[in-house]
Amino acid sequence: MNKFNQKKDIDIYKILEYDDLTEDLKLLSDMCGLENTRAILKNYSGMYFYIPKVTSLKSFIHKLIIKYENELTNKELSKMLDLSEQYIRIAKKQIKNNNKKH
Image 1 (cartoon, rainbow, N blue to C red):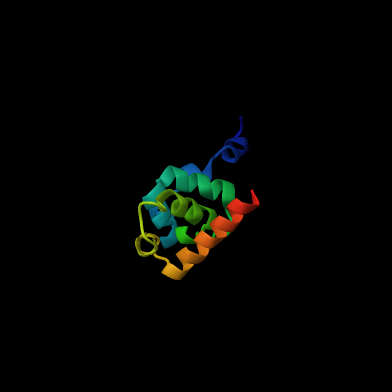
Image 2 (cartoon, rainbow, N blue to C red):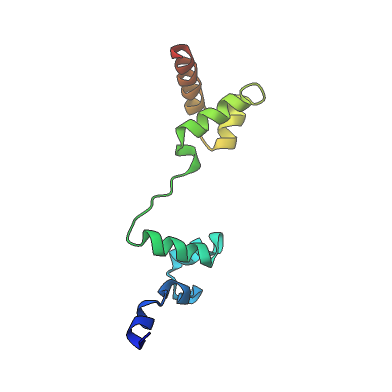
């Protein structure tokens, strides 16, 4: 194998070190590890990700409301989820309406 072919086989992502990362990627690396950050860069470079608050995941919120419906008040649910009590009431109505449809 000549030198040219050897250079083509170099995985630049394995050479990437923590100090080479941007501040955002350092946060990701701190949370997920450098190997996972390298894999994300290798497979998803150029993509933009929006990471929503967990409370914007409507089906998840509905699941939690159903799970804790008999254990927590609307006020307690709203504090736990960092949502307004009005949002909890509306979500409960939506859940009830969805259950009627099924």
